[in-house]
Amino acid sequence: MAEEVVVFSRRFVISVEGPDADRRFSATIRDRTSGQVLTRTPVRGRSAAEVRDRALEVLHNLVGLERVQEIILEIARALAPGAIVEISEDAQAVYVRLTGPWELAVPFALPRDDLYDPGFDPEDAREKIAAHFTTHLRPGGRAPERPPGR
Image (cartoon, rainbow, N blue to C red; front, side):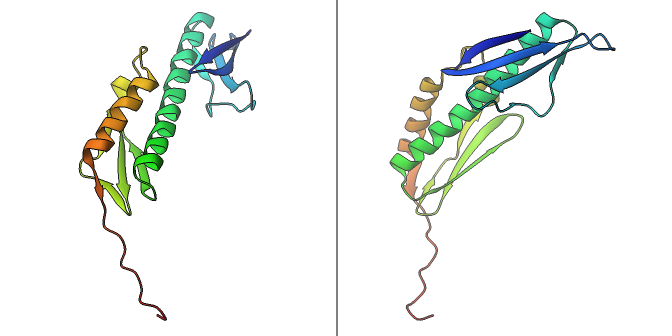
């Protein structure tokens, strides 16, 4: 069974198969436009409904994270041109640092609980990220320029 879903204005297809020999169901998630599979391994569950719900949760998390990364890069380009944007993550949060001609006095952190909340709104996140950048952005340390001829 295949179902088309829309998450953050993008279209995806969730395909559920099963049950297999272990009486488990599997779901794959594909980007409808590119056909690209979003996860390396299928999402698994004990029933078709359970695996569909898990696949939707995985999809929201992945696309939400991707959208936040796009927003961070857009804001950095606008407010800190030329800065190198370093995005990292761990189990607690997604972190942003800037290096080069601009830096953040306080690195930005978006808790994963916020990102994975079903009510997560990327546009609300945009406002928080922009406010943080505006408040904490400062000129950074540039690498010293080489004298001509050396």
